[in-house]
Amino acid sequence: MRFGLLGTGPWAVRTQAPALAAHPDVEFVGVWGRDHDHAAALADTHQVTAYPSVAALLADVDAVAIALPPDVQAARAVQAAGAGKHVLLDKPVALTVADSQAVVEAVEVAGVRSVVFFTRRFCPTIEGFLNQAAATGGWDGGRHTLFSSIFQPGNEFGASPWRRSMGGLWDVGPHGLSLLMPVLGPVERVSAVPGPRDTTYVLLTHEGGAVSSMVLTLDAAPSAARYETVFYGKQGWLAVPPQEADSVTAAQNAITALVGGTDTRCDVHFGHRVVAVLAAAEQARDTGVSVPVRL
Image (cartoon, rainbow, N blue to C red):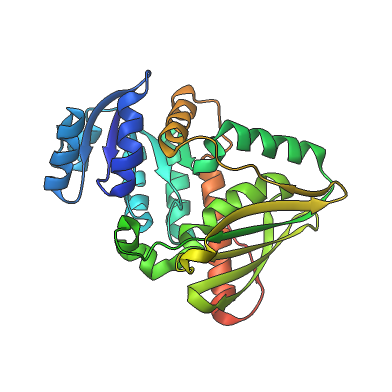
């Protein structure tokens, strides 16, 4: 499958581009970026073409991997799907429910494939754990804690304007939902409150009655950094295992899912549900009231 890459930021450089270049079932054709000099540098690294426009790149490929800020990604995903190209998206799909719904509709109308790259969902050990936990059942709830500390000298992600603006809820919240929802089911209602260090405390009511929580920040004290997801119920407490695959390997697994076309566990419909939960959490946090999830 001929792939193009949209984006030239740290995630594109570290993850998507190397994954595309090394994948045995992919012909990595070229790169487009909002900064053409950056696109040219990344393209030169992988000996592919730097394209002057998205339209020019789309004309030469079967699929695109998108590594752009979510508010930019949504419009480019609609453009790519409208051109009949399969889409490998980053999380979150968009920053509003309306924008993510537009991506869903574009993909459906075009009949193209979609995969949203939730990193840990493409690690076989973690996916196997989630499948087994879902099959076992009997879970009363779960807890997801992601304390990151990206606003430190030398951290390229800390310079990202959208991460500074939207915070941990939108950047790392998708990771928590991608682990909690496959086991506990869709989320119906959300409550949330803000805390110190731009932390968001989220309470999720799932279909069937399970209740889970997420605590999320990008500005934790470095000594407090933590990534942990646990489930509890009649089976006791069970922790999601650590990520065993690096991000490039996980991205290659996501590419394989898109190329194969039969793996829909993290398609744009799931990505849209994640955006709807995040939007409800944002509203709940900012208004102090419990909010239903509206797709």
